[in-house]
Amino acid sequence: MTNNLYRIIIQIYIKTKDKNMLSNNFKFYSSYLYSNLECKDVVIYGTNLLCTVNYPYYPKIIRNMINIPNNILSPLIGILLSDGCITVSSIRSPRRWQESKNTSPICNADGVIGSRRIYKGGGRFRFKQSINKIEYVYNVFSILSHYCSSYPRFVKTRVSRKDFYGIEIVTRSLPCFSELYNKFYLHGKKIIPCDLYEILTYEGLAHWIMGDGSFVKGGGLYLQTQSFTLKECVFIMNVFYIKFELHTGLHYQRNLPVIYITVKSVKKLYPHISNYIISSMQYKFHYKLMINLDKHLYKLGANSGKIL
Image (tube, rainbow, N blue to C red; front, top):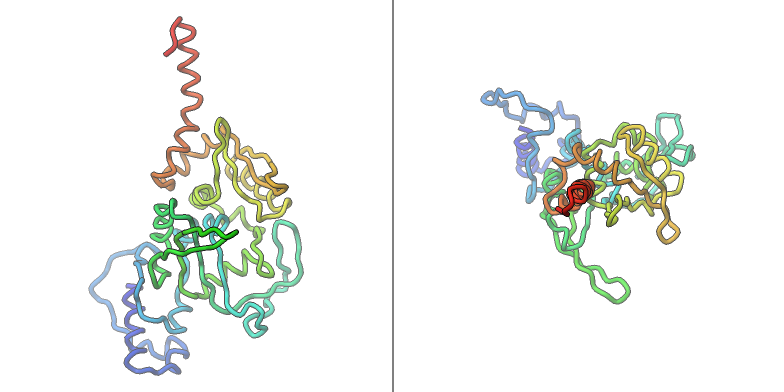
């Protein structure tokens, strides 16, 4: 029904070309919408959002109607903490910023950082990975397809005179992504928000691991958190321990902090996130789960006089 609503308003816009009507309050043109008297099903909010690729241009009123339900926000948080990013246009333009009506200052894991300024334009969510992770990219696209105007595209990046090929997802410019930008960015740099404990779920953590996790042979896994400060990494470790009961350590790679999750914690975590891990990445977890089993079988064989 939500998609039908979008289509009806777009058709009105195409036929009338009355931009003033669309910029006014929704009640002004509610009489143009047709009543749906056939569908009487109870639909859970957020479960009926279909792919909107190749839909016509969204007028301002539709862009302001679009929100992010919890079933999409949960994985989106994990993707944003890993390799996802949000870009905004005219970031230096004063007219696109406004002081928050809330007098409380903005803060991140490092503590209080000045007064709150809110970006009031549209933001685009972007996610790019290498070609060998194409399965995971399309898994992310299945989550974000309602907000995209085109399918994932192949891109080429040149670094140190070498060409690297990847695949990228870019959404429409929508105010709902600007809300996430105001939470996760400060002066154009990604930060860890103070309410990470409330917004990070098992599903989000699964996507964080799939995007930024690297496994250690014979050990646990690393979360590549080099883009965050030392205090932010310690804050993340506290959230992991208090909310998920995960034992972690702080290591350094190239003088930058990374978070190490122990093997025991990986095994404890996996049953909670197994439904969200795509098939191409499950073998890494299975290897960790089988380490103690192999040792146990070896000991049984040694005690019986033969190695199993």
